[in-house]
Image (cartoon, rainbow, N blue to C red; front, side):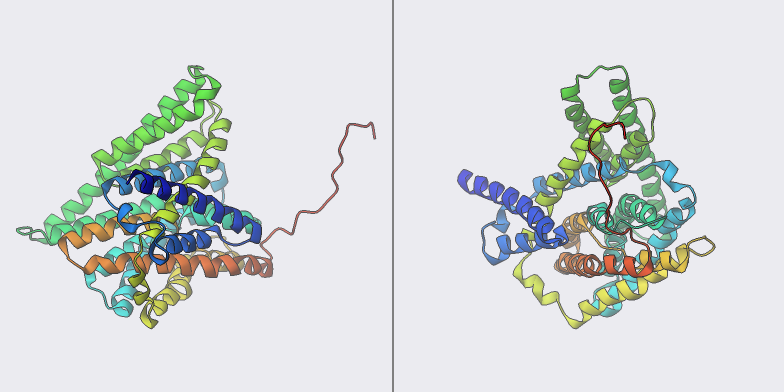
Length: 416
């Protein structure tokens, strides 16, 4: 058993990092190769035994890793970037999330033929986009002007917002199916209570964690070689404590903690930022290999005309409508709207939340949760493939992409 686990662990790291290198080498979206390698290693070849990739311990690791990834994303967000685009970002993570969640749920109900409960859960999960896929695309496209900032902020901030929304939907459905629970008032109170708890615990945990890190760094209580380790320790502690108090508040706490750290002027964070970037690549590689290796080959049965139509409606109708409604009354022009409307890939947060939710749903609605993971992974693969291959040509056609950097490099310190 020990040898099997060691082989599985080694295979995960080799496949994950190898997929990242091949993606860089051949200029492909890395997430596609990660998903393909995981699927080949799991259900196709059996190199990774899906029975080893089960249990609460795995999902605890997945949740924690996502929290660290969102903290790293938060470290890249500067409030000064919101000047002139703050209203657009606000609308996208409020109006855009609401429109996406409701219409995606309706599309799932009509096109996938699932129950109202499962449709609502799918709609909640697919409100998220994700920094793990958007940021690499933005680095490749190098958009000009405001759209890059808007897309980056939306991709990072919408993850905890969407995850919290999905949790509230799931908890409401669990409450509806609990025996003895009746009345609209109980449901409304439960939802309101959940939102208040999420915000209070998430914001409080983020402030406490950021304040502790700033104090340690500002007073030079940490040697240089321990700064990254202690920062990681604080992030993990904040995530674990807030998650223990309220499910999914950890994602909000770590994201806000990253934003707070990025926008304070009391302590330098350059070393922490560099370390977290490297850690993010490793975590993304491991997570996608592990989660895709858990998929059963029977998931291909869900690739039907209905599911493909569902994917098309999400990309061609729901996302453009959400962007249009979120930019009414703003100074965003039609080219920028078109770029944002064609940039909504789903990433690791959607995959992780779907994997966890499918198990919880099956506990109260046996068999109904089986469709969640295949549909979410179909959307992840479809959106990353289409957006990844087309967003760069679209940006160049719209005149929103910087040309390839060319110029003259002068090396030396001669007088001339």
